[in-house]
Length: 172
Length: 182
Image 1 (spheres, each protein chain N blue to C red):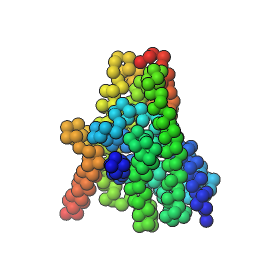
Image 2: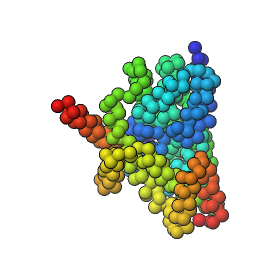
Image 3: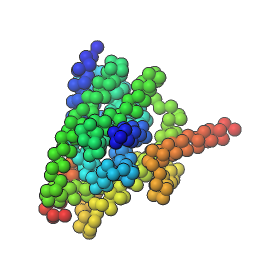
Image 4: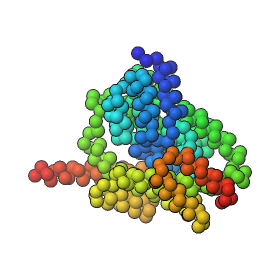
């Protein structure tokens, strides 16, 4: 039965997460509230792994969340369910459109969705921040890391690596 | 005609090479699809990229489906899509099964406490980036604020919020067009 819900929930994410991999975060956060598949803390760890391994982040997140919930079969099922809606839609678009362009209604739809998606990521980011920023030291590290990310724009793996080393040295 | 096994191999390679998401993978796609194999022109790739942003789902996977379909029809689409997700599924499953054994090691716990701070910083960084590139007029700022407050207080599902905000924008656009036509 859990596999049916896994399929349904990840199919929904694949259908409604518009704008790329990180948009899956608020959807997975909602899942952590709704089911006992994984905790908020585990979700934060998953994001770290998804950001520092090869592959599209959204796919990595689905695989990890599926694995946590239902083992290897869960991982494969969650990933395929995530990909299925866009697979069907892209083939329809490729068949119907001779010229690749977004039609006016689609553009209007997206003009409402894009700002909403930013709000969604922020909405999921706040409780994750409450888990990660537990004391003054962690807040100082957070501010320093955010400033470094804004300044140098290195790949996420670099900052995740640095933060891991800081964590071990300071025994956070 | 591209062989299906070759198509699978190419997208597997792209799946291994790409880190992160979004625009980060455009150079890799361009090198593999446009420069090396000439399966699409640079302009077509940019078109595919913008179409993939307009459609639901993971952008890299959408592009794989699109190019696979263009080259070999339905079978090509399936092969390219499976190719681009296979490395991620294998790597993540391996890491996840190894990590569960080390999660109670104290150094792993320290490391992940640090890592979680970086994750939150990365999320806020993305929010800042997206806000700067998207919230360019007051209308969009209002949509953003309404969406955020709605989520905080009404606890909607994210999917429902996406549908409501998108449909709301269509209705508003239609209203504006009718008004302009008068």
